[in-house]
Image (cartoon, rainbow, N blue to C red; front, side):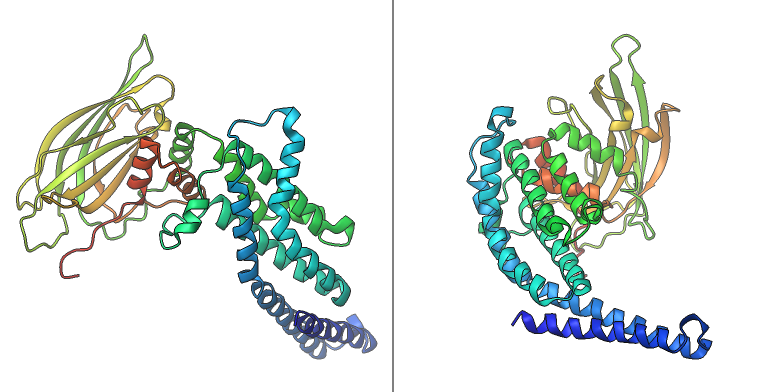
Amino acid sequence: EETLPCILMNNVQQLRVQLEKMFEAMGGKELDSEASDSLKDLQVKLNNVLDDLSDVFGVSFQPRLDECVKQMGYILSQVKGTGNVPATARNSVAQDADNVLGPLMDFLDGNLTLFAKVCEKTVLKRVLKELWKIVVNTIERTIVLPPLTDQSDHMVREEAKSLTPKQCAIMDLALDTIKQYFHAGGNGLKKTFLEKSPDLQSLRYALSLYTQTTDTLIKTFVQSQTAQGSGVDDPVGEVSIQIDLFTHPGTGEHKVTVKVVAANDLKWQTSGMFRPFVEVTMIGPHLSDKKRKFTTKSKSNNWAPKYNETFHFILGNEDGPDSYELQVCVKDYCFAREDRIIGIALMQLRDIADKGSCACWCPLGRRIHMDETGLTVLRILSQRTNDEVAKEFVKLKSESRSAEEGS
């Protein structure tokens, strides 16, 4: 059944070649502009049809690739040994990489041999590009960065434990092998295309983050995610905060004093008692042994509550203020069940490092915004289930405004 789509794509490609020849025979560049335009238009249409066909053809392999990559993940999860790989053990890593690649190579061997035989060269390149993309993305999605909230398939979550440095080394080697395979000694895709493909770069970046400590990952997150609190078009309230930053001249230790003054214009409907309070959390490296979270007292049935409570955070001296941020969350206190989240604001200490202090009203948004890098860090940390700091960080960054009653 695989030969049929190949023949169909070959035929469309033949049409393109014939059209090109006809264009030349009719005078090529000398051709009258109207005729030339309609031929070019046809050429674009055929090109689009070919794109669509190779796309559909590529996607048709997804279920089988999912199965292969799931098996790869299982074989990888059986690899024992956690530490970094000594030079003497490189051979065992190569052997492990071959074992892990087994299911994928069986699939590719059969299919790519067939494509090489049946497909015309231009068509082959298109099919290879689609397959390459799907293979790399499936590995990323299944083995390296499984989705954050896929509790439905317990089996997948079990295999998707955090990768050890050894398993990362195996995956690195496996990716090289897959790359060479698609290059096919020059008969397949160009080396530069494979190396520069954003899909591969994204996967490599994720693997490089894997071996980093929780502190380093949180620092990467704080320094790269500069728009977390942005884009609050319809704020759900605002909170007045005063921050003062002190650095000890002798030890270089940073202290942060945070005064929660008040909240205002809180948008929240509830039939029961409304008891808003403010939770302030410091996020950054080297805080595992320090107090990271403070909460104000709650105020009853007040949509513009005054708090005037002051808290002190100690940051240590390992990193500068640009590695830290303050997440402020207004919640509705609920006895005997989880507190409801009304809104979230975020302040990065780098923004006040120069002045040393700031007092402002921060708009409350519904959730934290992050880009691909932020999501990658979150996914990696979400797999560190024995690490309290990682668990708390993932919860903070995944939280969003609760549903109101009657909405």
